[in-house]
Length: 346
Image 1: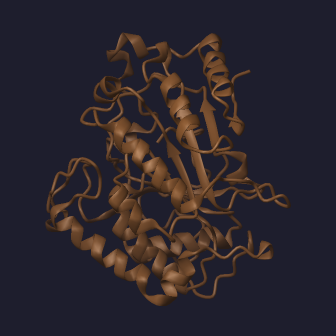
Image 2: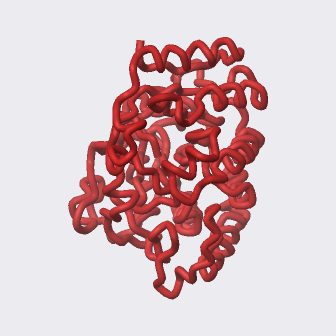
């Protein structure tokens, strides 16, 4: 994902023991109170799904899907359960890089106590400029159980985080749903933010209907050649992402801050990273949003592109963007009629 900041506040390294939110990380956490938003009366919709048994049923179905994995648009059909690694480089083992209160996200997610961010290892995309490539492509992380992930969610809630923020979650959808089922039964009541590249199959997103409260998604490219070049194997990104955005909006609607807390508990939040030379076709991205989603759709126009990982192998993206490029993107968004913009470079 295109992150606002890459350094977590409390990292999971080595084994579960260094995860400071855990007093005893291998024991279950029960009867956890929802500190962050219980006074606002917000009850996540996944609670009803857990109580009806639907949440676990969906998790079990998706877990079985890993026998011939088609969770992401690569459709590699790898038998991940047998231990083989798919095109995303993940097998059926749950691997996590870090879990912590995170303060580098949008202010409507961070609040006073931070966003409860879980960084999953590996990624279904292979962006040559990825700022988190050590995690997404080199696999820096450790194995954890579904029970461990459930406990992480509960302890992030106990720590006072305002949401559970799942970063690069696509290839671990089964584990997430099963962990959320356990955590909800034990008292988890925080909104779930699905922090994704936007390269999501609509049939997989349907499993998240009533589960995810906040879709925090990139819309990276509106140009097929750029997608294929800078995220190899994802030349169909624009088509897939556009369908995904429509489904995300159908499920959660427009993201609007709560007037009392200024926090967002539900809705679609779109990020777009402006790249050098308009290679991603920012103009098309913003005009598509304006033409196909409400004018007040939350759009964060991001300025922090940094040539990391393999970006220097591509001269056209081997530099930071300049102020003129960013200001042009803002002008396009405003002229298209978008009214709910978050801006960075002035």
